[in-house]
Image (tube, rainbow, N blue to C red; front, side, top):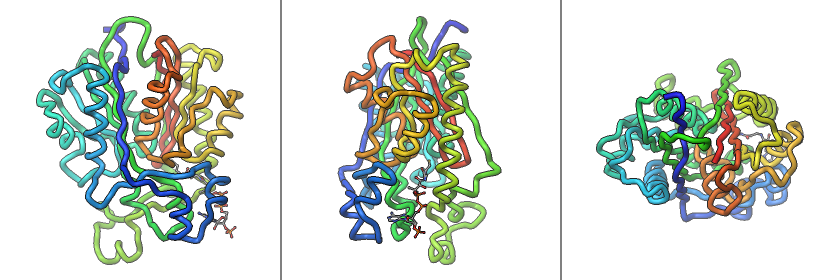
Length: 328
Ligand SMILES: CC(C)(COP(=O)(O)OP(=O)(O)OC[C@H]1O[C@@H](n2cnc3c(N)ncnc32)[C@H](O)[C@@H]1OP(=O)(O)O)[C@@H](O)C(=O)NCCC(=O)NCCS
């Protein structure tokens, strides 16, 4: 089985219709377009309606990825949905997607690694495929962070958006596929980015709602520092595991949380701006959906061609981080 690689053979994305601009946010909290633009690089983001949930975008993205791969739902052996904003505690979003697309042969599960979810998912899919256990995997990164955002907290509500991206991975021989994945975590720093309420530690009740502890709590500056440091290290580790160097990369697709974080990572890695894919001005930070939506856009806009080496690198709550090297 060692010669089989997990190859991405189709991708798709789905976004809410509703666009929330920086000008809209100026009317909601004490902020300015100028502050948001210069501190984050974000101009607008997509926000789910009250009727829409995480799985709705996952299902649409999955159908597009299947079409793109020219595969049927019945070809899928396993569905992995990376999310930290499931529709409900159970069933998993994986099972909701499995039912909606009619993937009746597939096993289904969710994976929780916040914004690093899709990179963790790539490692999981790669392992299942290379072990020979599964041949075709639907891997989805999907989140609706707007549902757990405190819309009165200007230091967090300007950063996030909603969306989903999906990839079909298939066991294939040859040069193309996921070459390496490096993963890391540091639970001792979990306090700097968390949603403390609404789980089994503090189940939803009036106190949780009144204190808004069911929303995102973040120490922005600490997260910023940890993100830069660990995305740089993960990127270097993943390249070393693939026996490649910076020069071999066609493009690096970093998690899109803040343009200043992306620029710092690129600078420390000595990567030129034109080798870094950026779309956060349109979407903000969509958590697990971010890197796969960026990969979908990079590929479909012609930035990536067959044979190109691409790196995905992400960082998120947990803390978690990781990087993947893919030969297209
Ligand atoms: C959140 C973030 C943009 C804040 O930028 P920053 O340069 O660190 O800003 P600070 O937190 O130092 O705040 C500077 C000032 O701006 C204010 N401020 C915060 N949010 C603001 C907003 N939306 N509009 C205007 N002012 C704001 C602060 O209150 C502070 O004011 P003060 O100096 O009077 O206290 C930045 O820390 C960041 O991006 N961190 C990483 C977040 C992240 O990526 N999270 C997800 C990881 S997956």
